[in-house]
Length: 341
Image 1 (cartoon, rainbow, N blue to C red):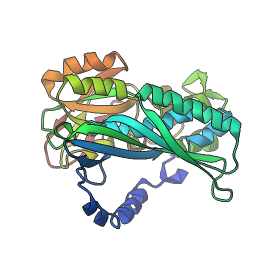
Image 2 (image 1 turned 45 degrees about the horizontal axis):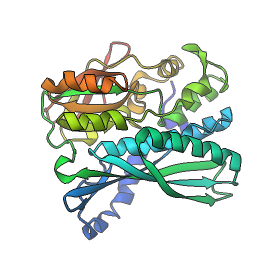
Image 3 (image 1 turned 120 degrees about the vertical axis):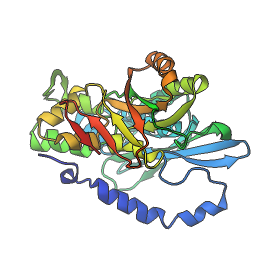
């Protein structure tokens, strides 16, 4: 059995660490008119009848897989995706992004590949990349690290925080493209250390795909379907299913529980990790398991929402909301068993 903490990433310790840092920063919120509290997917700053949304994220250890494959032209897509998908969660339309590239040693060829991916991600997101920073940090950085910070805009009266989610509301899940940019430390440990596979070996549950190819599949960008959806339907909650898996739903209205009984079959990359020894509960606690984004809305709007989103990405109804005060996610796994997160 292989867990995330054994791969060097302790989710619980991360939460405590973040809380320790954030506790020192809360006093700064008084200097501006802040709408969302720390912990939501994106922060909101009120500017008259508009709100400026901000989010920042990086590619993470997916970069190490790119290094193994000597292929860097897609991780820029991941960088854009992780930022803009978070901005969407407050109902904001992403506008612009700046990137931060820290390198051990400048490499124009790799930089060109990274730029290609960033441009492709920005194109998919209808977002301008308006600047950035590159730093040479030998002794601190091995190879490189890539991150981005984005801004979006939303009318104050159209902000989505999840506060109006009610029992009986429906959760629909938009399909992921694969592992996205979370849990790569665990994935690398399972495939490369525990199973002894190489990046260019066949994926156990999909021999036509190389392990490295599956891990490098770019994060899906949900801007176009979500922006279209927001113009047509009343949406009560939006969640980017990233690190922590379906626990991300708990970042919305406190005390609500989610009963997910119709999740899609996860992609072969997840099935492979499970077959190689990652416990089932750990899979759903760490990875998106085939659902990259969740939308919460009233039952009468489900049919139209599915129709809108299906023009862009696979989507299906995956469960419903319970107002039981417990704040749990109970889901039916790919094995047909039930687990609580």
